[in-house]
Length: 261
Image (cartoon, rainbow, N blue to C red; front, side, top):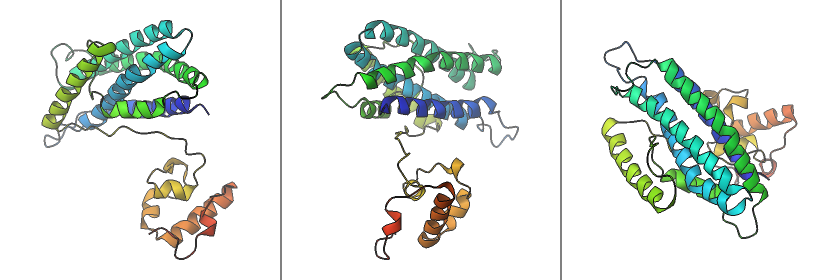
């Protein structure tokens, strides 16, 4: 299974969704709520910045080591990530009132981000696919490494710091500490990195109990699910599965003493 590719596509979908919400965010006209625009933009910036840094830390060295043309592709990918980071830095500058970006229209700023993001996606997904294909016995788990890297990555774009080697590691560590300080000082919205996984083998009830459901695919509203007890929830999920021809391994054999509390 192309686990890296599945994860890359899930991350890109998440980034597209957060980019769309960030792009339409507007400052509030309410003087008591001047920062209404900040959360969706900050959420997108943090997610994108962490992911970019993680791919540079994990995918690029792996590509150089494992792929026949890895050196050339790594160079191309690094150049493109720097371009996207520069576009993201313009968003941050515009949002926080930098003199260098204050007169630039938001549409122009977001257009640049979308252009660079669109150009980067196929490069990353191609790398992910080929790294899946060329994974050998004993090779490290790049998916786990990516998630760990995101946990320790900067939460803001830093297009001009070193990207590779010891200088890159040191620069990112310093940037992460600086970002953490300013995130706390500014009360910035910084979500935890998402650890994607293939959920196709999970039943609807398992997804719900893990607090990780595809709620957009559920015909029952989330607030209705939240009010259900376990018996009612199980009946609802089984009815939904019956309608779709989906089986939910394990749920049919639950006894009274085995149902989750």
